[in-house]
Length: 317
Image 1 (spheres, rainbow, N blue to C red):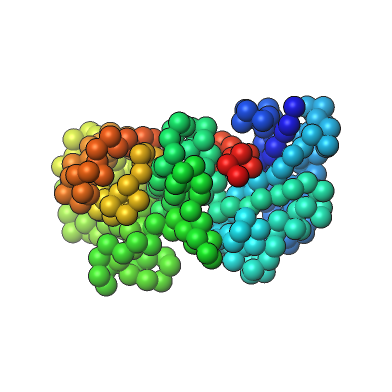
Image 2: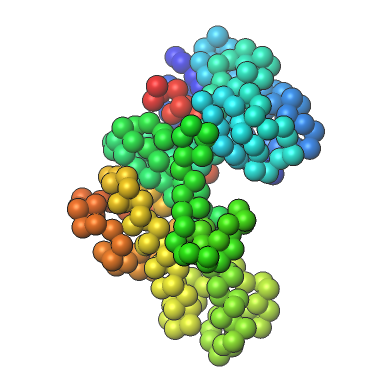
């Protein structure tokens, strides 16, 4: 039996799982990343955890065929990290070679959202499809594009950075420093910003009452919860967000024409109230032929998507 390890390297926590050749997670563990200790120590701690998990499952090192690591940043040729989004580490460093030197195991890297995308494509909501786009709707908007069962990473590892598609000329400021990005309008951050600006003017609504006037405590989930309760103020915000989400997805459909759009992340958990708006708006922004036989699905793997993406990097070559 062949075994693989999937690693989801996060800003605070790192999730590590050992999988068999069928993509089944046999054992997993989450550890603190402690990136401030530096690259080498962080990778050594990850390898020590992998060794511990292998011992618990009586897996011989010679049967460990690969380690796949999801990285918060652009990855070039599944080896080199252009820069780290969350860590004060060196740029353009070959993490793959470093990990191989520490572990003696072949190591491949990918951007963390790309790992989620390839995991969902092979084992989750996109299973059985050859083309899918996974959109991670959270604090920001990340994306992963799979065509002919392979990730589109781009020459500099920035392929799939769909959160920075421009939807509005000279629009709202995005965290990337540019204006009018998809992320500035349809992410949790964008939702909260829009809701707060409206609450500063209109306080006669369920959303304001539910916060007891403390709009600094507002989260995107509060908007969706109040909308589901029939609050017209919140429904208007959901329609606003759904419009931009439909516009962004429409642009992707017109460019890629995938079989499946997979929505993951906290905003996606709002469910049908947002999906209904998006589906209506897609008719306005996407060419009709791109909607033919299109499926829009929620991600199925949850926190395991990045781990399963680790083995997918080896199975899709």
